[in-house]
Image (cartoon, rainbow, N blue to C red; front, side, top):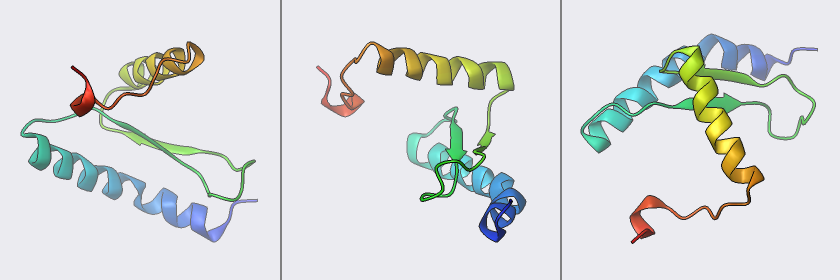
Length: 83
């Protein structure tokens, strides 16, 4: 069953993405591609909702690349700490 929180999220997710897109561009000086996946925190069986500022094929590529790094147990070293 869909919860009120999930309905609110669905109604506002595009606006959240627009705000995130603008904030990232302001911070970085250029647009950054993203995929945001959201679900209720305590409801592990809930349907995840997503929004992205890139086309679906690029979203798939971003997610697959991340999953491959995780599956290879590659270390998560933040870019600002890399040599």
